[in-house]
Amino acid sequence: MLSRLMSFLRACWLPSSDRYVHTGSDAAGRQEGLLWYKDAGQHMNGEFSMAVVQANNLLEDQSQIESGSLSLLDSGPYGTFVGIYDGHGGPETSRYINDHLFQHLKRFTSEQQSMSSDVIRKAYQATEDGFMALVTKQWQMKPQLAAVGSCCLVGVVCGGTLYVANLGDSRAVLGKLVKATGEVLASQLSAEHNVALESVRQEMYSLHPDDSQIVVLKHNVWRVKGLIQVSRSIGDVYLKKAEFNREPLYAKFRLREPFKKPILSSEPSITVHELQPHDQFVIFASDGLWEHLSNQEAVDIVQNHPRSGSARRLVKAALQEAAKKREMRYSDLKKIDRGVRRHFHDDITVIVLFLDSNLVSRASSVRGPTLSLRGGGVNIPAKTIPPCAIPMDLNST
Image (tube, rainbow, N blue to C red):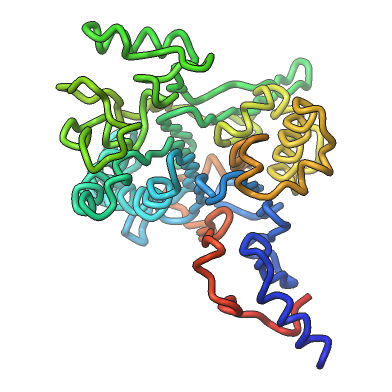
């Protein structure tokens, strides 16, 4: 009993990133330091694997997987929803999307009684409008909320169709079996909106022909107005509405010249893909993964290993590559704490969705297993956690 009590007291003073209870079940995932993972689970259309590693002081990546009814009606349509929200400037926007986007999608699906690109587009717009209203409401108390934004990648499997919607530079990559050779080749399904890409810069120039400084090369990185790397996002209201380009917003975010139309867009690029029996899996991941792995490298890692632990394996491969780039050992990189870790890599979120062709081909009216899971859990700054505030089971290991 004394040893269990001592373990309990020691746990009160662990850093918040280490305050996780390990139980015999991984129904809600497991935590190892800055890494959260769920190696294997079931969704309506097959299996999945999920992992998140934190680099920022506050986890700016948020994510979720939902499977079951995609509407407010229990009668369906049924399917699987994946969301990866890569925040920047803080976690507020990505957390807001995590709380609201799927609910908006269910509402519009109920209204149309079907899944469609239009439903997804409306859900994005409702989420953007809701966050803008929040910024407006809190402008005097929290003006910096206007400078927080998030990329937004969504995948929906419904009735044999895969919808992929994207804002920003997260990425969805399909692993497709080539029967003639037995190879599994990578096929990118998402369009990206990072001004590092020449095509995205040209799009910005065409949308803002009177502004020669719409995209600027700053510290060897292309940025919109010298501030941000993506041209589309949820949030970043200070670059969408001129009334927020003023005090009390910090001067470093304010543009010297006024603007008449939004600089950034919240219009998602949407791809509709009819799933085929040779479509094996889809890797959904935030930009933190793709900074270190190519599409084909990621597909090869998933294909050449057991399904269980696929997402965690991809995260580890990216971290190993990040360590190699800095000429350090992977074991030493893992010892670096959040905040400082951001100098070596970004937050990384990965969801691998395996596709069982027999399950995918079922009608969207067929009910399947219900699932609702968020990646990484709730991230609380250490200073806000009073000693022993985390409930613990003294019998847990």
